Amino acid sequence: MDHASSPAPVRPDPAQIARAQRRMVLLAGLSLGLGLLKLGIESLSGPLPSGMASVMMLAQIGAWAGLTWSVWGLVSASGQTRASAFVHAILMLVPLVNLAVLVAADLRAVRVLRDMGVKAGLLGVRNQELVRLAAAACPGCGFNCRGVGESNCPECGKGLNGARRAA
Ligand SMILES: [Zn+2]
Image (cartoon, rainbow, N blue to C red; front, side, top):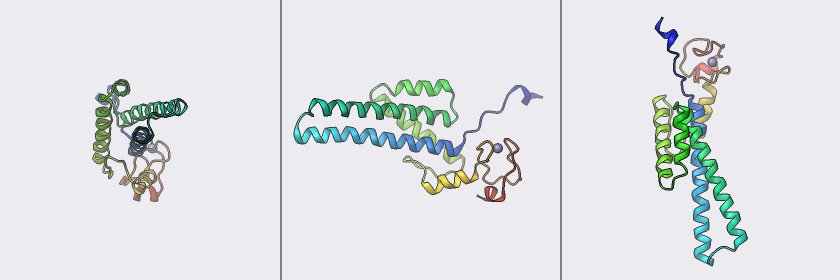
């Protein structure tokens, strides 16, 4: 009767983690790219004209806001609590600390994915692997049913087709 009082923790969905990680890596690259572009232009032709500088600043703020949001998404998808995701998002506003937060969130995602048998690297999961994950997902709840020998999803009980089980 014990398990009735302690609900099973929500199992992280590898496809969701993989997508969140890709989004984060992409936005980190975009953010870095914008910073380098600004530095490059300034070193070649001096300070940017004010109009262009504002556009550039807005683009950087946008990329950084997106990055903070994607860190939140990745931390939540990796099975951490809302409070933890919130702390990560706040720390993304602190210069230098935010880089450590990015790397830590990335490393954790890689570890969680590898624990689930997904080939993952710091720059994310390859397309091929994403397609494989999507194919193995339960049509009902998205649970990764790869290697499940039954004809129904162990999480929600929805019927699986053979292709999904074999994926
Ligand atoms: Zn299911």
